[in-house]
Image (cartoon, rainbow, N blue to C red; front, side, top):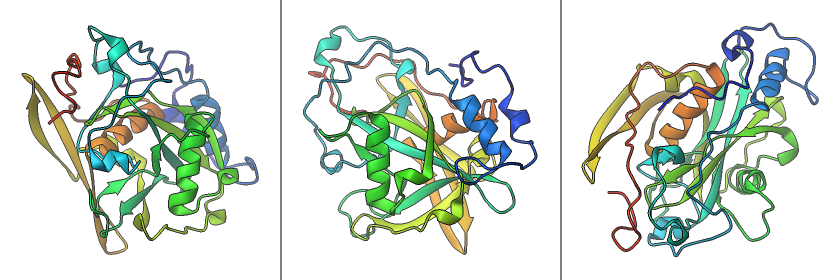
Length: 284
């Protein structure tokens, strides 16, 4: 499956990423970020017809009942053809925030979190800010921004939301929508981690998720289909983090969209049909 975005983006974002810094953008930022925002607003996600966004199914796993988006594996919706009885397959919704900004050297980075070691599930794992939709959320953007404020203290007014990417289906059948936003002035963001959920806030270069450096993988199989789980090791400020599973998959896709090129390695997502809910409720 192609990792490039819709042909509606007329100019290569690869060239945009080399643009010189210039005028302000919503109170800060560079011409590079302005151009990136303009182009990403034209991005069109591949069409999928599997899900009804307004319906829900009962969750089966405790970590998803907590409302957070952490999973060993997840795939874009378009890798899962329509199922026999789609009316019976109505996953819950969630959203994560891919918050991009330029560091002092002009490198495009993404904000990530390390989950608290005190949590009962997925403790210490890396994730994007985000979680399940709540009844009062008007849309996926509101879900992602609300969760980001709750988890890391990121004020919605600081972020220019420019697009959403194709939804991912998580291991436990949670529909996760990646929301892409641009933090135009990183100095205005004062990280305030929620100690009950977040142990650390850090950032990593987005382009890293297109490179084979510091990447390992595991090949797994489900219902006769093979797929890869990717692991990226990243060290910053004498701390080492491993970004993997669903989070890594989302960032690979985001980097492909932003830099207008596929990763230098094989993604290998399966092209399978989601089974009937009577047969299975999660992917192993």
